Structure formats: C-alpha cells, structure tokens
Length: 477
Ligand SMILES: Nc1ncnc2c1ncn2[C@@H]1O[C@H](COP(=O)(O)OP(=O)(O)OP(=O)(O)O)[C@@H](O)[C@H]1O
Ligand SMILES: [Mg+2]
Image (tube, rainbow, N blue to C red; front, side, top):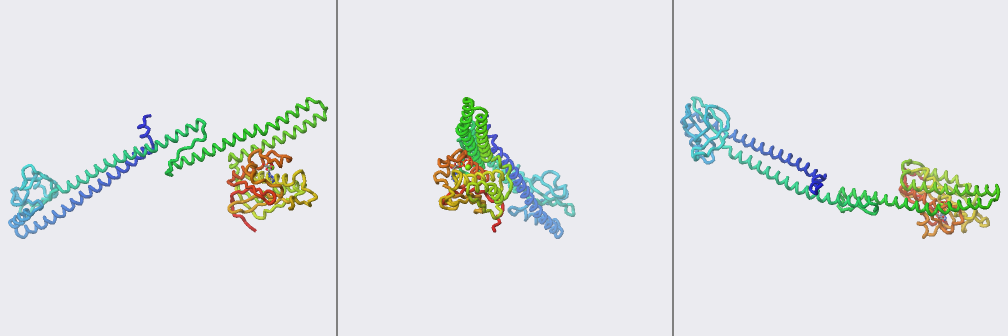
C-alpha cells in the first residue's frame, strides 16, 4: 500500500472526514436558514411599507379624487430613495409616478407580484426586480406601489457567498489538519509496529515508545509495556524454574540411581534389597514433594490460582493450622501459641494460604529447635528466652497479617531477600531436612493475593509475616 493510501485509511483521517461532513452539513443548514429568514424578513418589511402607502394613497383618492392622487404621487415620486409609484387611466396611460416601464399585463392583475421594471429616469436596459401591489381604484384608475428588491437579493448573495467561501476554507483546513494528525498518529503506530516485530523476533526487552502526552496511544503503550514486563518476568521465572530443576533435582535423582546401582552390584540378600528399596521410596517421596511444591509455586506465580478466590476468615486458618502443628511442636519441646481472637476476612485461595502458613510454622518448629529438641537443661528456653512459637492473625492497617514468630537463630538481615528464592537454604540449616522451597511458596502466595511476605527480627528469632489485603471489616475485641 502506498504511503498516501495508508494515511487515508487511518482512523484519524476517516474521523476527520466524518467530522468535516457533519460540520459542513451543519454550517450549510445554519447559513441557509439564516439567508432564507433574512429574505423573508425583508419581504415582510416591504409588504408592510407598501400596504401602508396604498392605504394612504387610497385615502387621498377618496378625499380628493384623481387630481389629488396625481399630485401626491408626483410629490412622493420625487423624494430620494422613494418607493415605486404608478397611477394610470383605466386604459393604462400613465398619469403620475416614477415607473418608466413594466412587464406587459402587470396592471391587469390586482394584487401582489414580482416583476421587472425600469425607473423613469433610468437609462434603457437598466431593468431591476421589484415587489409591487396593484389596486384598482373606484372609477377604473390603476394604482401601483412597490419596492425595489435589489437590496434583498444583494444581502442574500452576500450570505450565500460568505457561506460558500467559509465552507471551502473549512474543507481545505480540515483536510490539511486531518492529513497532519493522521501522519503523526501513523508515525507512532509504525514505531509501535516496529517494536512489536522485534519482540516477535524474540527480543522480549523491547518496549513500545511512549510520547509522554498521556493520550490514548500513550495509555495503550503503557498497558502493553506493563504486559510485556509481566511476560518477561514470567519467562524469566520459567527459565529459572527449568534451571533450578536441572541443577537441584538432578543431584537427588543421580543419588537415587547410584544407590540402586550399588544395591544391585553388592548382592546382600533379601533384607539388603528391601532396605535399598525402602530408601529409594523415601527419596522418591521427597522428590515428589519437591515437584508438588514447585508446581504449587508455579500455579501461584502464574496467577492461575486466581480463579479459585473466595472470601474466608484467615483467623480460622491460623487456628486450624496451628492446631495441626501443635503435637509436632510439643514433641520438639516447643510451646505453640495461637493468637487469633477476631475474624480477619481476606479474599483469596484458601488452600494456598493454608499451605503458605503451614510452611512458616514448619520452618519455625524446624529451625527454632534444631537437632530434634530444645535443650532440656535450659528448661524449655531457647537462646535464654521461652522457646515458644506464636502464630497470630490480626489487622495491620489496611491489611491482614498472618504471622509466625519463633525464638530460634533467625535469619541474618543480609540473607532475608535471598532465602525466598527457590532452593535457597542457609548454611546453618543444612542439618535439617528440606528443599528450600517453603518460603518461595509463601512469598508467591502473598504476591498472588496482592500482598507480601515479610521476614523480621523477633529479637531473638524470626518473625515471618504474610500480609494480605483486607476483604471485610475486622471485628476487634
Ligand atoms: N524460622 C526460621 N529460623 C531460621 N532460619 C529459617 C527460618 N525459616 C527459614 N529459615 C532459613 O531459610 C531457608 C529457606 O527456608 P524454606 O522454608 O524456603 O526452605 P526449607 O525450610 O529449607 O525447605 P522446605 O521448606 O522446602 O522444606 C531455610 O533453609 C533456613 O535456612
Ligand atoms: Mg521450610
């Protein structure tokens, strides 16, 4: 398509054409109405004047007969800018007036009519149009009174001409304006198309140009750019996951395989095989758990889980999950305390929020009482403070905070942003089982709900908080 053809087909140009047409129709109607009304007003004015004069002259005739009428008409005819007058005998011979010639037969038709005429003092061929009234006086005399229509026609012409020229000007200006606007829009669309093509070619870092005018194209570009940002982040996440899987799952799988090979190589009888198989099953279970966790994180990160959102009481979840972990905590010599006195409504995926909270409690139990149990000799004390875990739900501004606070070693500030990444485990916790996915899931779930996972110092210990947007009023009490 040629550049001009492309330009003429733009929405901006076609809109210009439509507006131009609407404006022309509107302007033409307005001018037409104005012109016709002016014309009508002038005609009305002429009619009134002529009627008044006819009445006056008829009166003169009644009072003083034809002689007096002739004198009055003669007088009036001589005034500058006077009306048209003609008094004739019943046979049509002129007695007085300023009309030199008329269209034939005009005097035979009493009443109103438009006719061509020439004034007595005007040269030959200088005919004009006039609106006249003819009356037949008693006695058969004819009286004609009228006004020249030149003024009316001139005014009409002036308006019509002004209309024509202004419409022509509007068309030219409209087309030129439409042309420039369309060219500007087209240039920006072309720039966007170019960027889109580089993105389609695989370069996800490309962004649509934003002119900064805040118009609809800018808004579109902003939204598309935000979308690209998200797609790029998802792609990056996807790549990270596959890299993680390649690195972190390969090791346990290789270990599993080597163990089986070893068992086969050194025949140790039934019991040996059984032991090897049992270990294999246990390790496979770990692998399956890791896969499940990875899938759950992917689900939360992709936003797919948004379909299952509903309103629920987070305080209830805190109580339920807390209760579930109580025996495990007790077994490890820890006291698990639940503080969720009031309803805390949030909107979200119940299953994912429960799992995220369970991960935090699991961490607290696991890392606050390392190597199985809290030091018995310390009388249920960890780091010199009571070895309790507090699981709570409550209002925090416009958010609902689900928190788990322990008295364990905590996480050094420098490591807090790192531990939420997949498969990241701190050196100090290598002795505990785990794959480093618990906090990643909690963080992904919080973000899915428009909230965040915060890790704070509990002086001593760790306080991990899932902050979610509030769905309803929180009843405090
Ligand atoms: N309450 C805590 N106190 C001390 N360190 C913690 C605590 N919670 C988490 N960490 C540290 O953060 C790391 C990441 O925790 P995360 O829950 O993601 O993985 P994990 O517990 O090691 O394994 P998983 O949860 O997948 O079984 C842990 O390995 C540990 O080093
Ligand atoms: Mg964990």
